[in-house]
Image (tube, rainbow, N blue to C red; front, side, top):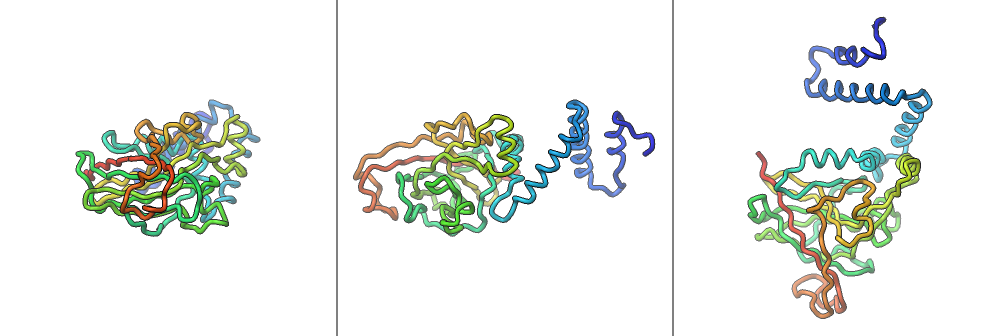
Length: 289
């Protein structure tokens, strides 16, 4: 170790593994160290900058808890989450997009045609579609983990006024692979900016806004699950998403429907007497290889 230098330290690190080290772990750590070392050499990283970076990481750890994961948010705004998504997306399947830091596990079941908005006011949105495989075969019994913000722009885990499962649901498709539910029109919102991620955005001259969207995790037996989100085509932040989550195939169109046309057989039938919005979005899942 006495002969280590700024030029050979990466090679020294690469040779500093035990014989029983998992090969994939060695590959990932060696590659990570190589890029980190190259970054430090290329930027001539100063001690103050290095310490500031460590302080930001510590701050992210301090602010992270069961309801908020600042490291996920950091990965999102740096584009890393979306890059990993795009690397592993299957071309014929629905694109994946960021999970985000506010997903809640074990959401309550929601029947097909049921209402997810409950007592919240806003434009009623009817969401319908089919879950297919990549051969366009409908997938009966597929599940959709669905979540969104409330009309105030907050997820349930951010808002003490909301039940933890507010605007969260798990739906199972029917024998034709269909799903449907009602909710309120999602709103654009800002990612949390009171922590290290906010400091980075401010320093970079970036805004914290995300376009409005619905989150989904689509799963079916024998298929690869897809974590994704879908966006309306008229949102002002569609091409300015601070976490780089928008994909061409994830853009949907709301259709404004006339009063008196709300479909029969849904939970809100007879209750929606005015205009409402409707969107149809289909999912395509690739089969396990």
